[in-house]
Length: 265
Image 1 (cartoon, rainbow, N blue to C red):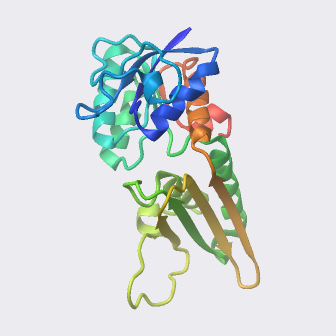
Image 2 (cartoon, rainbow, N blue to C red; image 1 turned 60 degrees about the horizontal axis):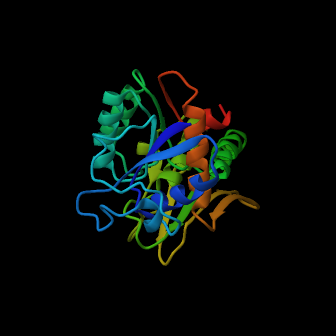
């Protein structure tokens, strides 16, 4: 079986992935990683995840671990360290971390020259299908409509807009030959004036335990189209990450996205 390691193993996503791997016939969990100040260090990852013990203890380094693929849902800085580690070990990597800057994304892309690496703003199969639908709708409707993206997440999320909202925004921008960094409107306050034609608006909501909700609105004069995805359990992201890892292990070195893994390109 393929050996898998999980970075951020004691986090919400990490625990969910551990639980989802219980019935997986492709992977065997061999390593679980957390940051050096984590209270979970030294504990059995199964116990931490609310299932039976796995005899895999959470550690703060993967230097002594044996693994073929790493799934990483952490933060940008440790993710970059994990990319370097995967390069050193010639291991595949699924990156689910959001909030990466352009330089960090470029480092991940360049890593694809040496290892199979997949960067996912969102690992949900349905979300990535929605992104393709958004691109299709944008091509058909163009600048005839106003396009707004609304996203909502739990109170603990630290980046905004979400990586998924940006993924959807990039789908719009790609279809309309726009530059999201120039045409995206990420905040409105005070006397803003009229909406700029052709802009792509974003609104962010944070609160409670919302797993993730995203709506892209195509707003015309007399009609409106909305493409919405609502996550009610983060296991969909874990299932998608495992699916991505399964696909990635059969690939040559290269930089990939969820669209590649799902055959949506």
